[in-house]
Amino acid sequence: MKSKFRFHFAYLFLISCLVSSKPLAAEESSRKVTKLADGIYAIEHPGHRQDGLFSGNTTVIIGARQVFVVDSAYLPSVTREDIAQIRRWTNKPVTFLLNTHFHNDHNLGNSLYVDAFPAITIIAHTETKKTMDMFGPGSADREEHTNIRIQKYLDTGKGPDGKPLPTEDTEYVKKVLNERKPYYDEIKKFRYQGPTLTFERDFSLDLGDRQVEIKFLGRGNTAGDAVVYLPKEKIVVVGDLVGTPVPLANDGYATEWIQTLNNLSKLDAETFVPGHGSVLHDKSRILLFRDLLQSASDQMNAKLMQTGPAMSRTLDEVKGSIDLKPFRQRFIGNDESLAPEWDEFTNGVIKILFEEASLR
Image (tube, rainbow, N blue to C red):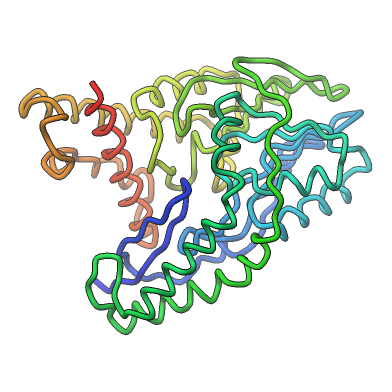
């Protein structure tokens, strides 16, 4: 199988792995707006995981008096385009902006909303604010160090494993670096803006003829995952608790995530906006992800019952016993271009379950 370097920078660090080479799909390279109901829109941003410069989805909720936005994207040019689009939809001010969690592909654009709407209140769970305040200010420096690291691969001709790069991989690394450099010129000028209002559990806002409920259903992808629920419209914005077609799970609280997805599935809703990917119109994907996590957890526990506690084992010793292949077809079908994301996702699930078990 041909291989290329793929760089995925979610969760604030570089993960490099060899994957099959596929051209960028059309839906990954274009901006997509979905009207969910009158005055409610989901924006799916361009970008892809290879270069790490992909922004999370943004949701815009327009009330009779004011506007509520969920997540502010990553690249400044993307956020500015969103703000311009909102102004085409309405002359009402964006009064509230919620950050679903701390990963900066969902909140680096906060300061641009403050510039555009000075009276705005930025909302996040208490745990999200803590982590954003810790990692947010260093975002530009991390991007610079990432570029330096990629350049080092080219200069030395060796990958992160120390092995020589094949010619085709070298060309791919060059392409990724060339794509990243102009975006770094944007990011290095950014100004960090953290949340200005935090919450622990649930509260609601009235935008004028439109009720918005902000909820914490439990830990999952992060310690402070927030969801936005519109009970009248039966819409939920879920952040990275769910992603399509393949979730992101390189970090998090796998066992608690199962119950959090259970809690999410109990909401009276028909439309779900994930942190990345297309809008969902039923709960099947949420329940599928829950079932995969439960299966992986059950298999991990059964293996450790045989071999002894995780603290006395290594991940490599147990991961081969966790079989998630029965879920593969249901997540990605026959689309082999998604195979690298599937492998990254399932490896991430097994990793975080093992890390949890190691603490028991």
